[in-house]
Length: 289
Image (cartoon, rainbow, N blue to C red; front, side, top):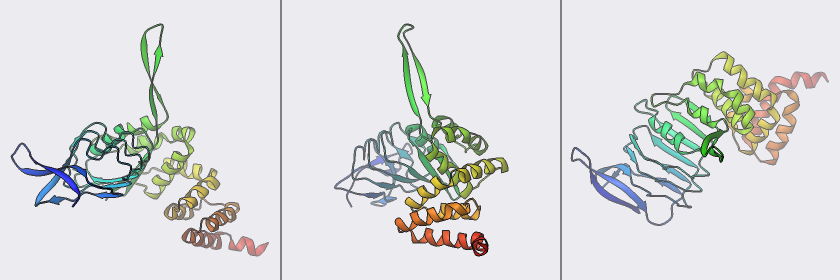
């Protein structure tokens, strides 16, 4: 056991463990739920800040407190898995985590409080998977800045990018999915990469997805199918390729270029999926030519 920790007592006098750090290097941090027969309930201030060896973090359901700057400036941190029992979230937990993109939230209390806090703490593009309800949402990046009016001696707030209004769709009790879907045109104009992920996420996990929004997403993916397929294949995202196939969003002329990319990237599962899609939808056309 290489964890550093301290014994604490809550207001009721109950003992628990607070993690304060980790000795040595670690790529995947999986915090235990119990240490010395006591629940691990807290990650202390700056416990893992500035670590460049950390790539992923998994926190147990016992954690209810994340101290200030816990993972601050962990430049290589890519993913976090945690539970919705986190009640005390202090500023800077994931600030300056430039590589962070995937967060999995395990719900046991139907709470979205920690999701809202995480989104407020990081202005980069973040994708949340919420289990077990089967919800996956991408939130674009944004830039919050100040513009100085020298003559008036005032600072004007300036927000660029679609990420801020997307974050406003999240409350402590849930996500306004209708409002989230209605923002899609802003994401499409702002960042095509985020727009692709938003559309794929909502079509793959269509919780409360209305017909009009479904049409927006399908039309966008079909219009940009070559770019979409290239990105999915290079990233090895077979599940999303299957979604495109199931929705019949891949035209005949896009199949061969996609197969070439899949062969180049050695993505055998995607190659098999595309070939089966080609056989089912375009085999009759090929035979008549």
